[in-house]
Length: 136
Image (cartoon, rainbow, N blue to C red):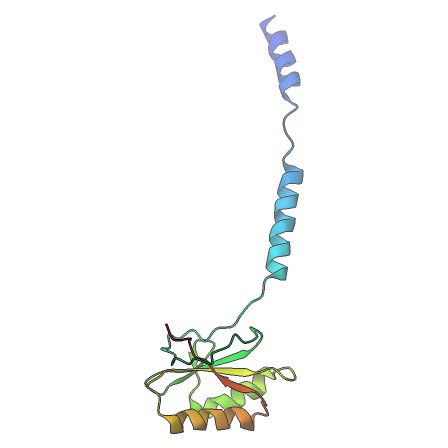
């Protein structure tokens, strides 16, 4: 008798909450947020940007190049040097009208910045911007 009662209980408790649809929805939402998020490629280097009262927000769809205070040039966290700017920009083949934003340290001499801008212009980039911060 005891056994018959246990089998009836197992049959009744066999109906649980089905979480399969919940897992499906969670994965669909995760996929949606991954696909729709914008991936911004940062330079991966800490730069002390100079201040400017004319600073404006630029499009996030830009190519970022960083110049550190010790005159090293970076793209995507990797040091490419001054001579590596032209081959790097030719390799990534930027879309038409995609600007380059140079994040330059405030201690970098002007003639070095001009050399960096010249290298970017040689790659056929029309729009070159220098990243600054608004004064506090």
